[in-house]
Each structure stands twice: as structure tokens, then as C-alpha cells.
Image (cartoon, one colour):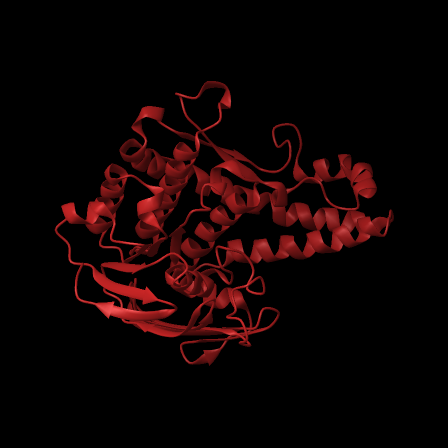
Length: 369
């Protein structure tokens, strides 16, 4: 999968820009605040429905403009075809088109274009709360299932989300009648198989993570992934856990157990007792899990997702830059890299990246490094 055209409008400092990327390495340079990261945000927005810096209404729309506009055209290998998607997002409302047809759900756009992004905040995958880790698992399941022509995981995910919303409304209203029994049953019926999907995905991801981590952070040893379903699964079924927690949930006004509280963790032999990772180790761990996910996606879907690396040179030293870039070049993935200058490791690789330079929100193609 590689993007052949990217048009961006009204994204932070970028009023309007168009890129014709290379199917290989693409380098986007510029001073701090020039707007280079905004281009990756726009690509991420089309693939996830949100920026990796937060919600659209929290500063993504260029000051004085009404909406962010993003259009992408890309080529897929399996099956061979050209696809197009466009999104106009006003912060609260949005309009989207996919292959010339209007879409009614943002997830339809997100399912079409697969992008894996590593950026300065990615260490939250390791050091932050559970929500970004749940999103990572669900993103992987969503795209793998789409590639295989299935929809069961997405159906279960939506069914569980609807039931959770209904149960929480009853809890807030302190309703104690049979309605809670009905929604507990619905949560359990959707949540148990949803959890099996997630646990299986984490198990499949572990060997990919071990292979990447052996290159990037060998000093920590062979990592192990541990999955936490969101309730004490060893002792109780989800139905039983919901019943046991009911009085407590009525006091809280929300559901305290279930797949919406699921999580996963990475354990290293060199850090006994779950000793905290340093910031540098957390960055490399987050990058390892993202590259592992991209590799797993490639094996399941038959082609690599687009890979976006924001400010690579400031996040990794030259040695680690070189290992990451060599792995990506060998994979044949399309890669977008931003930085104030070209990463030093590029000089040691026999590649000719396509270069775009950003000045005050204006994108200018350049000939070579």
C-alpha cells in the first residue's frame, strides 16, 4: 500500500499543500513550527478519524478557517487497485467520500487506509493509561479482519459499545430492575468473544515484537506480552463479574468491569518486578510494538501499511535510526519521515528519498538531500 497523492487544506499552519510521494522513503524537512508534522497529522486523520495530537476541534483546523480537508489517493497490491478518499472535518461534523461514494460512518474511511504512526507521544503506549493500548489492539484486529473479508470483530465491538452505553445510563439513573439483567446478558454475549479476539491478537503479536525488540533493545532481553481482559477472568465469567460488581457500579454510576477496561503489558527479563522503563527504553519499546504490528498486518493483509515517523532524528540516535530504516527499506513499505534535517542514518543507506521542504506552511519539493 502506498499513497500516490496527498492533498491537505487548513491543517494548522498549512493553508493548502499537495504531495506526490515516492512509494519508498519520503522525507519532510522544515524548521520547528513550519508545518511538517501537520502533513502527517492529516494523513493520520484520514486513517484514524483523529489526529495523534488529539481532537480536530482542539487546534487542528487552521485559525480563521472552517474545516480541515484531506484527500488521498493510494495504490493497493492485494488486490491491485487504486483507491481514493476525502474527508472534510469541521470539528463536530464531518463529510467523507470513499472511491467516489459518500460514507455514513467515519470507520469506513479508517478501514480503507492503513497507517502506522510513531511520534513523540507514542511512549504513552507503554507509560500511559490503557486506552491507547486498547486502540492499538482494536486497530490491528479491525484492519486484519477487513483484509480477510470478515466483519465479526467490528460487529461485536459495536454491539458491546451499544450495550455498555445503555447499562451506564441505567446505572446513572440508579435503576435496579430487570433492565440491568438484560444489558448484563448483552454485554456478556458480546464481551466474551470480543475478549477472545483480543487475546488471540496479542498472542500473535508477541513473536513479531520479540523479533523487532531483539534488534532495537536487545539489552532488555526477550519481551513477553501479557493480556488483561478487564475483569478477573480466571475466577469469573463476564456475566458473573458484572453481577458481583452491580452494587458497586450503581454507586459509581458506571460499569467498572469488562472489555472496555482491557489492557496489555510488556515484561522484560532484565526488569524484574516490572521495574519502570527509562524514557529512552519506553520510546524504543513503543516503536518496537508499532513495527511489530505493521509486520503482522503485512503478513495478514499481504502488504505493508504506510509508516509515518515524526521527528525521527530527535527521538532516536543514529544507530537506532539505521536499524529502523534498514528494516523498513527491506520491507518495501512506504515511509514518511519528518525532521528539521535529514536523519543522519540516511547517509549510510543506499536509498534516494523524495524530499519535501516546508516553510511557513508552504510545501516545496526538493531534488535529493
